[in-house]
Amino acid sequence: MSDHILHHQFLSSGAGETTPQRPDRDPVRAESHDAELLDAYSRAVIGVVEAVSPAVISVTGGRGNGGGLGSGFIITPDGYAVTNSHVVGGQSSLSSETSDGDRIHADVIGDDPATDLALLRLAARDLPYASLGESASLRVGQLVIAMGSPLGLQSTVSTGVVSAVGRSMRSQGGRLIENVIQHAAPINPGNSGGPLVDSRGHVVGVNTAIIAFAQGLGFAIPSSTVQWVTTELLAHRQVRRRQLGIVASTVSVPRHLIRQFDLLSDQAVGVVEVAEGSIAERSGLRAGDLLVEINGRITTGVDDVHRVLSQLGHDAELEAAVVREERRLTLVLR
Image (tube, rainbow, N blue to C red; front, top):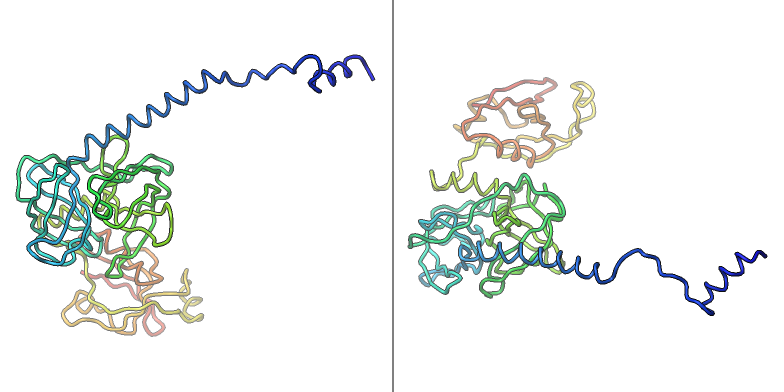
């Protein structure tokens, strides 16, 4: 064995001299760097909280009504505020409380259970408000801050990251809510209706649900949907949606029809009933028809129809591909 190897083993054994430490990291410098990172994170959260929290409200049933307990946030200085539809619970008026403890009466301007959103008008002026951001620009891993009044605890703040985007979940009415944000900021009952905020202090979502007995699973309606719904509620007190006027269900398509018409799915929307005087009746849609496409989008179930209709104006023209008695037809619905 060479002297070089013996010398290396001797040093490694701890006898005599100690093995020189690898100059990977200066502990003092590393600790300082970590502290700087923590301070930057803290500063970002503190800045957002100070800017947005004055616009966050708690919401309860007003004038003796049963109403839900939840949160909301003001979006204009003249008192318009957003919360969840399930917090409103069908009430026409509610009571709100600001972070300063001021109780303000609130009227329900509009309620949209299909997106679990509602628009309120507080009986006050010159109020602090929060700005809506761009939910479409969110990235997985991005810092988000949830604000609200969980379990009645006013002005509670929690932080987390965006866990996923583009989720779908069902509203209480059974309709799919699209592009839902999944995040890891802890929320609890009472957070519903409160804002989900990015590091710039812009509201990117409205917290709407948690999964019972799960941890780190929160969901928020994206700000893009909030913008659309509030505009509709302000203008019309309801969200106008394209309605076909049919009762339908998801059905299996016979194999010979799949081959005959080169269909891309073995499921379609079966028309069970057509309402009298509806768009569907005027356009020639009949009970027993198989709806296989709308505007070039394959419809494998009722949810697909809802998706297409939710992305169109209430008066948009539709083109439907229908299989009827061994024939494929194209119907214009208007």
